[in-house]
Length: 272
Length: 328
Image (cartoon, rainbow over all chains, first blue to last red; front, side, top):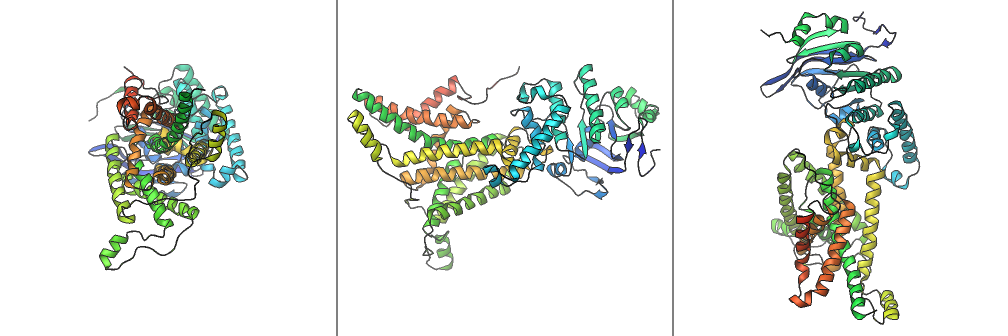
C-alpha cells in the first residue's frame, strides 16, 4: 500500500498524494556530536507524518533541518521534486513551510490578532507609498488578509482572546495561537514541534482534534514531533522512529508498534 | 499675574521646546534598542555626520577633498554648484541608508548573538570611526546650516503676550518648527510601526528572532531598515541642532544629553523618549531659573544627569520602560 508512488487511500478514506518532501541521507553534526546519522524518509501530500523517539533522539534537530534552522553536513533535502539549495530559515518559510516551536516562540508584546497577522506578511506586496495613503492595493490586501486570519481564529476557537496580549495567555492557549500563526501562512507543509508538550489531558485532546481538523479541512500536510506514544499512534498516518540520531523504524503506527527495535528503544534495552 | 510667574511660564515654554530636541535624539536610541537590543552609542555622531553631509552636499563641496589633494597634488574644494535644500536632504537620506547597510553588512551581521556589552563596544568603535570619516570627508571647520527654516523671535507671540501681560515672551521660530516636525515625525513613526507590513515585521523582530524567521522575515533586511530609520531620525535631529547652533563636532555631544532622557523615559518606549525629553528640557531650564542664581549658574550642565541618577535609584526601568520582574 505504501509503495504506490502516486499515493494511497487511508483507512478513514482520506486521499494521500505523492511525495512532497524527501530527506536523503541527512547527517547533522555539532562538533564531535552526531545529532542525526544518515537518515532518509519522505513526507507525502496530505498526510500526517510523525517523528517520534526518546529524549535526545534528534527529533527536534530533524525538524530544524527541514525548516532551515540547521544546515546538515551531508545529505539532500528535496521539496516538490526539486533539490533544495542551502537556505536561510526565512527563505524556507517563504517557500511555504511553516512551523511551531517546542518552547513557544510568539511575539509576546503583540495581541493575538497581530501575532496571527504576522503569518500573512508574505501575502502583502503593496509598496510603502500605497500603504501610507491607505488606498488601492494596500487596502485590498489588508482586508483580504484580515478575512483569512479571522477565519483561522474562528477555526481554532480563539475569537474571545483576539485582542489580548499574548503574554497574558495561559500555556495551552499560547500553543494554539502559535498554531494559528503558522496556519495563517497557508503552508504547504506544517511542522509542529511537540504540539502537546506540557499540556493536560483535556488540552491534549483539544490539540489533537485541531490537528486532525486542520489536516482534514485545509488538506495541510503535517509533520509533527511528539513524545506521547498514544497520541502519535492515534493521529498519524505514518511514523518515523529515531533513537540516538538513527532511524530505527518507519511505517504505519501498526507496523511501528510491532517493531522489536522500537519496543527496545522505548523500554530502554541496552545498546551494543 | 506676578512677574515671577510670567517669567517662569516663559522659561517652561522654552524648556519644552529644548526638550523636543532632546527627545529627537533619544528617539533614535530607542528605535535601535527596541529592534535589536543594541545601545547605539553612535547615534549622536550619526546626527553630526548627517548634518555635515547635508551642508557638504548643499554647498557642492568635494568629499574627501584633503585626501584627494594630498594624494594627487591637485587643489579641489568645490564642484562649483549649489544644490537646493530639499534635494540635498533627499541625497543625504540616501547616504544615511547606505551607511545603515554598511553598518549591518560589515559590523553588526558578524556580531549576531553576542553579549550586549560587545555590541555596545562595537557602536563606540563605530562612533569614533564615523567621526573620523566625517572629518576626512567634509573637513572640521564649523559650518552654518540653512535649509530655509524660519529663525529668530516670533513676533506674533511677542506682541500677543505683551498685550496680555505687559511682557513679551521670547520664543524662537526655529523651536516652534522643531516642535511641529518632531510631533509629525513621532506620528509617522508610530503609524509606520503599527500599520505597515515593514513596521509589523520590525516589531516582530524586536520581540522574537526565531519566531520572526519562522514567518519568513529576513533579520538582515529588518536591521538595515531599523538603522535607516535611526539614520533618518539622526538627520532630522542634525538639521534642527545644526540650524540652531551651527554644524560642529560638539554636536555629537548632544547624544550624552539623550542618556538622562532615556533613563527617565525608559530605553524601550517611544512616548517615554518624548516625555523624558520634555521633563529634562523643562526641568533644567526651571532649575537654572530658580536655583541657578544661588549657586552661580551653569546648572544646565549637570542638572539632567543628577535627575537621571535619582531616577536610577528609585525607578531604574524609567517612567515608561518595561517593568523589571525578577523570577526567583
